[in-house]
Image (cartoon, rainbow, N blue to C red):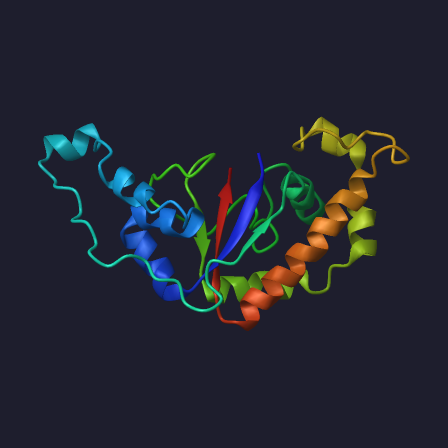
Length: 197
């Protein structure tokens, strides 16, 4: 499993929340057929029983503006970074828990391991502000391989000999890139989409 963070503006966030199949235009822009395929999926039993009709297909595709659709792949470091930020496996407080919790879920569209989650530009500003003071020294102080193994922090590599595989450096490098990515996203007034694939 790897986690991908993608930039998206607030207007388009509102559109994908109102019309969840459009999320495929963001997470797989090179496969436009996925939006149509998602629209054709069978509806739930309750919707069919109540006679609800599916939302009409949006005649206008999701157009991404300058800066939108930029992606950063956190590889398999995402859960380790979450632990370093929160000291937990799948808990913690916003904004430092944003990799695994929070935001708004984009319908029930499975884009990997579950639906995408979106954070508006206002939320991204909060995330960027919370990440700003965190540096490699403070992350290293939070690195606890025994606890990470006990909590089954994915991908369960944390007890490896640092001489052979420096798992802290792996997380620290991706954290540094993520912090810069989030800061840049905030400076552009954009929101974020998070997917686990």
